[in-house]
Length: 129
Image (cartoon, rainbow, N blue to C red; front, side, top):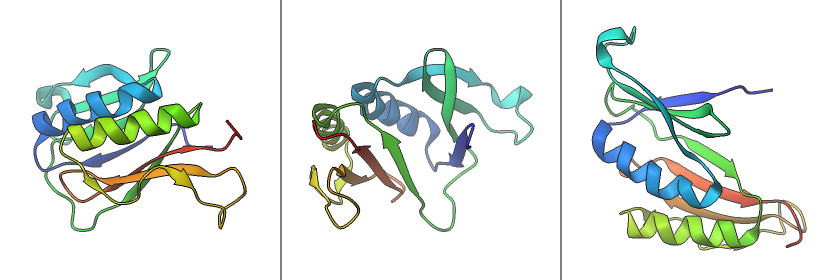
C-alpha cells in the first residue's frame, strides 16, 4: 500500500552517507537525489531503493521534533545481521541486536538501531531462514 516514505534529517550529507552504508546489506542503494533548487521544500533529498525505484527518502529540512520508526524488509536473516553491523560501524546506536522476536510472530527476526537523529531504524526478515 505504501509507495514511498521520507523524513527530514539534521545533517543531510552525514545521513546520506549513513543510509548508503546501512541500507546496502538490504539491497538498497542511492537511486536519485533532488537538488534543493528544484525541491519544493528548498532542501536536498535523497531517495534509496532497489531496482531503480526510490522508496526510502531523506530530506535536508532539519531534525524533526519527534523520532520515528522505520522497518525495512530483509530477504534473509543474514541480511539483518549485516544491516546491524553496518549500522553500528556507521555510527548508529544499538536499540536491539539481531534476533527472534517471537512476541510478534514465530519467524520475526529483526535488528534495531538509532540513527544520528534518534530515529529507530529496523531491518526485519519474516522467513524461517
